[in-house]
Length: 295
Image (cartoon, rainbow, N blue to C red; front, side, top):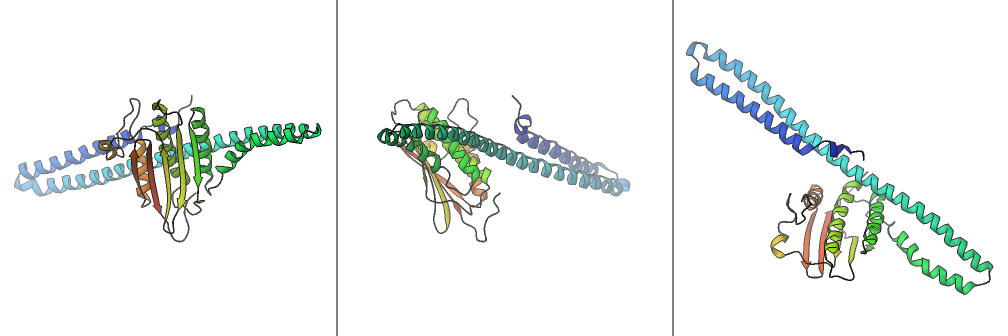
């Protein structure tokens, strides 16, 4: 399988390495300057100090530029990762729609054949059976953000394959949401995946259900992802948004931290409410006047 850009390059490690190396260079030059000040003879001290100070300034300036570029590269790669995820969701939605179009044509042929056989009652019964599937298809195409619609369709299919019902309640189209589409996909995707994993591990729950709600108030855009799995212990609820925190043996503990970072960068917030049989992550993003720069 072809590796993606963010899999080939560990940007955080590269950024840390750049910071450490350039920090050591600055420390080395400062040490040389201090040594010159303390050990140089009075006659040559001024020239030596001036030369070393100039070298220190050059090295420091270069180090600052290197560090800034390393951190900037990290942000670019992070955005590239979110774009890749959003593109994948769009591809998944396109495949789902093609499949559903094919199924729809088959359904029409069946109904037409039943009507030709003069059996309208059976035709009506058949239509009623497939009506639920048609409703599910339309229910995920209500936001103004195509990437979010694609994500919801893909996650609903993924949950269904694992025996989990993903209910969607969209009370707002999020028409002028200030968050970038692929970033919002990362937020919702992480939350839905966590809810799915919690229910997958909870073998005692016969009816596994996740509810995604999208809404807005006069001042904010809101959302919540709720599941009916086991509660998150009170002692852990304060730690789950910290980078590196995870309860999974194969996890990296960055999902919820990324969610919180994205929302905070737009002035938003997220909180968790958890009791036995109900865990909800509730987020909000303040509205902006003058439209959105979302792509």
